[in-house]
Length: 155
Ligand SMILES: [Zn+2]
Image (cartoon, rainbow, N blue to C red; front, side):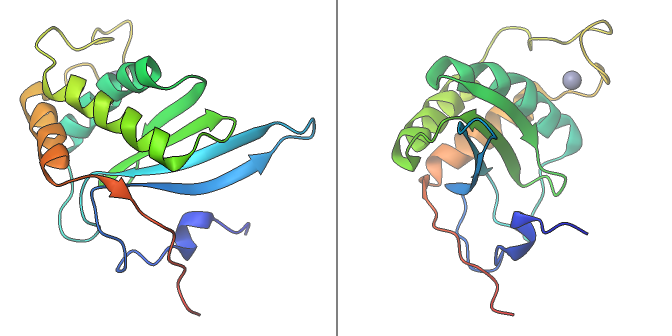
């Protein structure tokens, strides 16, 4: 089976909330695609409920694109402690940190309908929790986001 970057990260050594450059891929034509680990909760201590992380996905998908150019994708982690984000190019982590903070600020203050919430636009449109999503965004901001270096598991 192919090697997966996140399985080499020592999840006991990181301190959430944080932004971490998870990896950079070069396309055959020489472009870079960078993947970031946007962690909201400390791994293995808690998890964001499915409805709340679903709403965070809908809100951060738009708000991160408002603050950072060339976002390819923002997706929730299966462990429900954060999001992955893929970006064209290699923006520095400090810039991504600023954009994530701004997007979380927008999310914490979001008081309009959740974007993309209809049977036409979403695969589980009843499963959302805006109040909880706003609270997780607020908590992450209060927790003091920082840049987290990758700590590899010593095998
Ligand atoms: Zn959805």
